[in-house]
Amino acid sequence: MLALHPSGVIPALATIVLGLALLVPAIVIFLLSVREGYDEAERRDRRANGRCLGCGYRLKGNVTGICPECGMEIGSPKISPIDRADARN
Image (cartoon, rainbow, N blue to C red; front, top):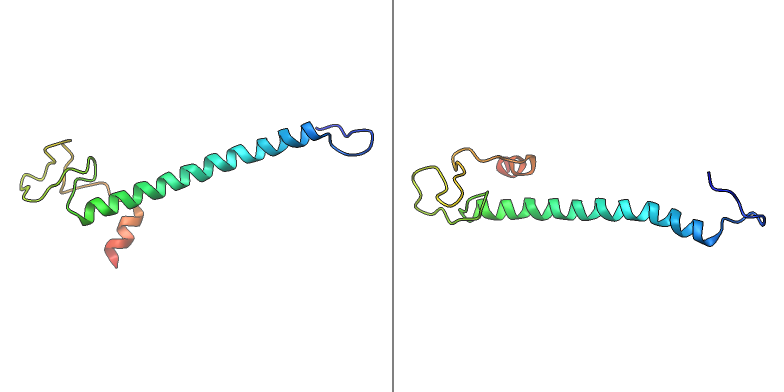
């Protein structure tokens, strides 16, 4: 528990430490959310342009069902909940 200054005000240093303790996790969560959104957009873009979801390799004309670059199965890619919602529309 933070001790109050004799004047009844938390000292400036304690205020800064408390602020950082709250701000740093908020920034980390925000950055992780932005990255996840970017990754989802990239996967949708790859799917729409006929590219491998794993590596982005162009799959036009591929009949094997396997990406020649990374070996990912094309016929059964991992589909995120966002992509499932897009497929229903």
